[in-house]
Image (tube, rainbow, N blue to C red):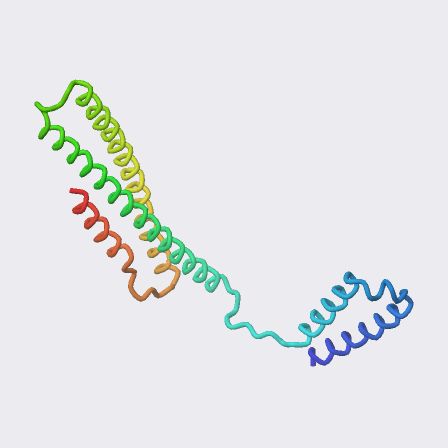
Length: 189
């Protein structure tokens, strides 16, 4: 019944609009602005006649469950990105440490064979590599703190989802990312 009433209102609106548009000059009627106004009115009016069905009512429980589900998805994404950043930082740190070790071995191998200027040059390279190692270590520690925060956030999101009634199949990203972090630590050693 409501759909029939909306259709009749829509037809009355179009009939009245066509009377009004007949008073407007033809050049103005064909302008792009009027065309877009008319097309939006036609689409909007036809959508009003289509009844929409809600899948779920908008109760407080359903809204809380939806929000909790979004939080778990977002926190899982945050954890994934933090894990990727931590893994990359650990890899870069390990490369910098290995480069430093190789430079020091090379220096020790050529200890009595270098001139003082060559020795100073090698020491400058070693000192700059030490600075890079320190920088990479700080970056790795920063990403490790971010990662730990992401883990706590995921745990809190999973707990909130559980208490709100969202049924998660298995919340494995935390275990997966923890094992990835341990593997990254092994790589850095």
